[in-house]
Image 1: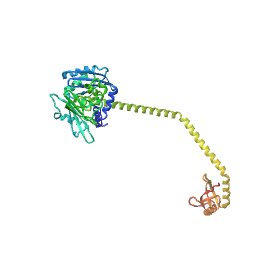
Image 2 (image 1 turned 90 degrees about the horizontal axis):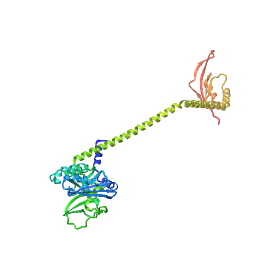
Image 3 (image 1 turned 135 degrees about the vertical axis):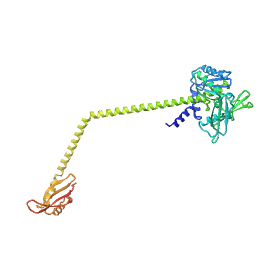
Image 4 (image 1 turned 180 degrees about the vertical axis):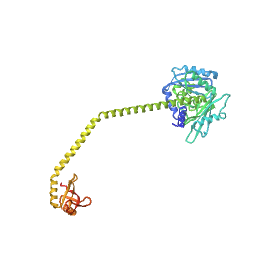
Length: 424
């Protein structure tokens, strides 16, 4: 695995995909206990959701940011069922939201980096440092908007400290405006308008989710949006906490040191998973090699134990093959004996007394070879061609002239080969 691939995997582990993470976490919120916490400028609300139902809800007020951590810790400890993770959203009166259309040509980690660089132009500082983040939200085929958020760093750190005191891991920390739509049954044409005193928040929702939030006067005479049945008994003030429990915002308002710490944890987890995977592969390879070696050892032992028996069987087989070949030769000789006798008689009649045969051989392939002496070898060949039982008669090699013992002159030494005609 290359370093670039590792970084991409870590990035995906730390920043959830806007397409796949939200449905997954919505299912998690329906079937597993999830604690959603919303923080406004004066109150903290918490909702425990399990299997799509609200099991517990609580609210606590606070006066200053210094009290916020203690209030969150106390409120989380009052939940009826123990949970280890909390999803937190900041309401509109705590943070700032800005939408930039058309979106700048940015992708991936360049988006939050650009928002951090342009924070002084996009947001008001109000005397405290800001924690910023941003995402690109597709609006159509060729349109997109950059949605950016900023929250005071003291508020964010107070929220993180309160969750740490309660023993909770912060699963997400983002704007409530991004997930509020999950608290309503349906959204009519136009923006989602949520009244809040003398003003109202208008949230524009596109095909990919919320992409703009505006504070407008409460002059809209339309009927309020309908809450989901589980929230109607609690009221609209608990909608952000419920939405946080069932959905995950794409914008994550975490300080730089917290992000770095989570990246280190994710990197360690990834390396641990890789180590375990490599260890399992090594163990599987070792077991396979051990079994293979054991099989080879057993096979070799069995072959050594049966070697003498195998050699005896092979020797017996060779003897049987030789005996079969011998019997076949004897049977063939007995079968062709009459023909061979007839051939000898024909040769005796064809050759005169001056021809002396030194060797006569009849092979299994019915090839007849004659070696001998005669005054004229050509005459012998001519006489043999007249024998009816022979075909393709010819000299095998050159004819040589040799002197005979006793001073009777020189004779031709010949070697003639012919084919014995097969009788059906």
